[in-house]
Length: 549
Ligand code: NAP
Image (cartoon, rainbow, N blue to C red):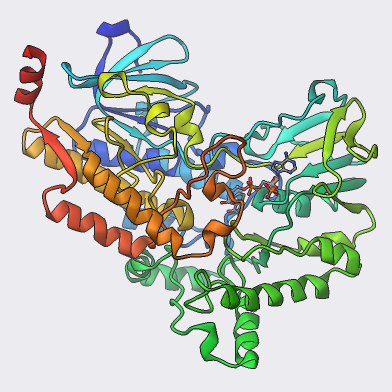
């Protein structure tokens, strides 16, 4: 694939950044329309999240039969998911299969990172500079860069002095790590930490978990999928998918119909128990309509979850330290396969770094402020990501009149529908900030966004238009709308990555759209039905006028 050539280099209709779920489908749709499109991917393979997060235990928290594409009925019929929740290798294999089956690889450039993007108003094009110094240009750019792809780097003093090995869950090496006879520390107890702890505890000689905030984790009850189940899902896939698309979270679970206040305590506990036995991320949150909006409703579920931890963990002091206090769901809930049980093992210790913070790292391990040294051979940093904006912030993006995205988003991201930002014409984001993406089954949101963008590009062509930009007015309205929706919930009370609270200095702005996939889809459909209301569309003649003037 020729992509070099300086400013006079090749011009594409569309450049897609990232070859994960979003980028692959975007390329497929672009091809269908006959667009000259290319994908730029920093990894050496397709897969995005599932390429980088290959740590032991990595597994999806959405059921595999829903965490997959729907665009090809043949693909739905031919891919056999083996487990209720697919593990990372299986999802990666699925995406590799998709790339091969639809011949997508020819138009993917691997091991190249986009470092800078400049909009040229007169040329009506983006000039993109890659990390090898090459340039390419294009009419449209789609950022399929992911929401959880810019890792939060471990910035602990002394890490360079550490004599052992260390890894970050979000950029795990491709070689197998040997845990035998190793003393290991895991820092972080989010979804990644919980999965890696559960996997490594039985393998390592000793594991110390350094926990800052305990997290809620629901049992996954993962198991092999039976052939009959798969056949049934396939037979009704279209219907099931439609239910997901119109739901809040992009899953087929029936929505709750009652407030937790409408039932007796016994009924509530029975319903929570039913959810716990069913398992999955919404085991408790799917119970009542006011779960995310009303303190007491959430508190009842919290008490149930803390009781479960006390039942599982035999040492009451450890159980207490593992018991979260925040509203469930306001930080992303994990799903697990025996996580809390790990703390009953003789080779696992829990250190509360809220009480005794990490001072620094030295040759033999992690020194706490109390002076205690946690001696280890291996450190696993499961400390998360610069979520939702981090991947875009890593690229120097300059829109109209040289406006940088960094400046435009200085006080937090501002978008219209999570799809575009005013000042950055012809640049789309897939599941950007202020879209439901991260609060939903990502694949449902990704397919909807890609379809929106692909249909939009077709519309522009049909109408001889070559420029599209969110208006400031529509963007202001959307920002206010998403903020108001969030203000009606408990989400704002937690120090979460949804709010940027995990990254020092990041503006505290709640970034996802909490209105749900179904409502968001309707909003987008209304925009399209009204000739892309809120977007300003331009013709080539406008460009000539601009260059003349
Ligand atoms: P995360 O949820 O941000 O968790 C990071 C953990 O590291 C938190 O416990 C955090 O504590 C801790 N931490 C961060 N900096 C620290 C420091 N300096 N000292 C001590 N502790 C520190 O990150 P993640 O676990 O990688 O998950 C991110 C998201 O990815 C998830 O929420 C989920 O959406 C997705 N994910 C999904 C799956 C799945 O599908 N099953 C698996 C993995 C990830 P605080 O809470 O105190 O900040």
